[in-house]
Image (cartoon, rainbow, N blue to C red):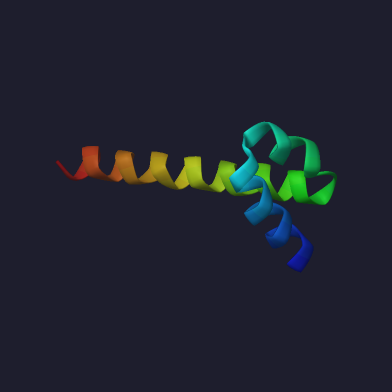
Length: 53
């Protein structure tokens, strides 16, 4: 997990392309999983707001 964070911080300065190239295997799957969870939570939040109003 420490290596993932160091790769993340260094690649943030270098851009998205290098981030994609550096991340491999489980790190990339974990990143995609985090994106999926974020999108899902945003959808639920928007649905809740529209339902509440």
